Length: 558
Image (tube, rainbow, N blue to C red; front, side, top):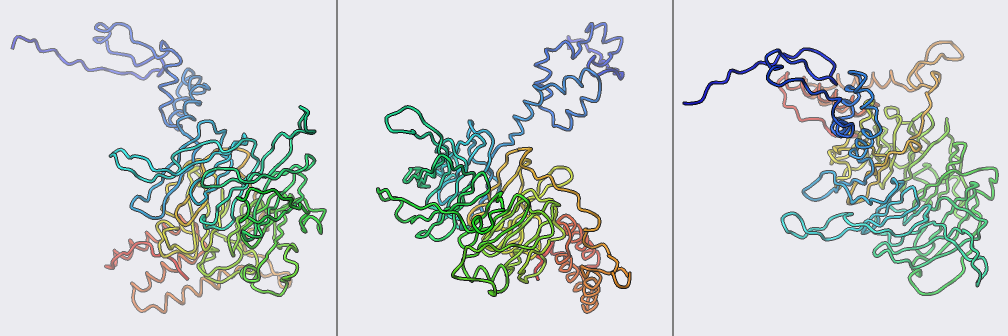
């Protein structure tokens, strides 16, 4: 009533340098005076504001003018961004229960990156790059609603320092992982009563339930080891130790007597693979309960198989199996240098220098990802998967961690889907399919147990394998000239397979049956997971347009 109406002022903004601020209209200049430039703000404040932007927006802002180019390129901005990205962490997703989402474990603040991890029966152990082994405990905690609930990996303590590697029972079921074997370096007195000491490698055995050390064995100072794996039963547990020179030593302990307060001497002997093939320099090892795999520095692969059943599953025959000489190494025939591997109970996966994946062994549940359920007695390439970040083989399923062109990660799986071990595919799949799991941006390794799926996130530029470009002459699927006739031939049988698929579609009587058959064929074909999702979605759209009821992507089974 007694108030005066204030006319609204319209701001007229002209394009100008972002650092100098917008140019105001004449009326607003009279009311507010000179505009404030961004350059007048303290540099720390500008860096703090910019650090809240996504990485892509920070790069785009740095291209607007010279001032923002210098600010966005400042070390303080990227330190804050990297701190928010939180590249270090252990994520897990439980297969059972109501909440089937990705959770994060407690993060040890003193950890210098994560090198590897291992879940046991009750807890999780993580080794960082400084040699500190952390003990992540499961415990009962109170929720926000005041209820007591069981939470996985919610507390941590330092188990030991100076650790090089660690291992436990190699079986996929964590129930058997009672003890934790830690390869570490300790200072030992040279002569009793003196102060001089020297570093010696040792193996310390801890109870996984409490973290209590129950056993320790120390080696001579002239022997330096870098990796430890276990193989065999509890009463005849063989410890395989890889030296810095690429030689393998082994010793046998009775795990059932480790908790007894007694001391005894064990014999350290050179393994047969290093004794019979002294020219080989082993780079890394992998093991399960009944077999061991060695990868040399030149990319060769050698196998030890200790039981006839596993030997038959892996090679399809018992012709060369010798029960009296189970340590005899068997060489695998491979077309290129192998970088890393994954070893399951009765199947394995290999990745070569060109990023190709080769699978071998039992395929009863489709765990080889070849699109069928036929066993493979020799390494067989999975053509539609390339350049994996990590590979994991379980009891009867396999997982592959891959990266897209936009650096996004996705998890692919095949084999048995019982118990929720293939999220989104409860009936399983005979080919690798995209799982319904949100993968962290910096995921680098994975592991699956009966109850949970684990993914380790830790960025390390030295750990990602640099794959080579595959020569054009080795690309599978391109016709090659027949040496005798000069006519192009199809070594993979692609043309014959397509004709067989068409004949199956023609044999269907109705349009709906043909659509369903085409969906099955898409699951059999060696395509990328994204391509399969595209074809399944397109077929659903066509099926709905024709008057059918779309059922979504089926589970492709052989």
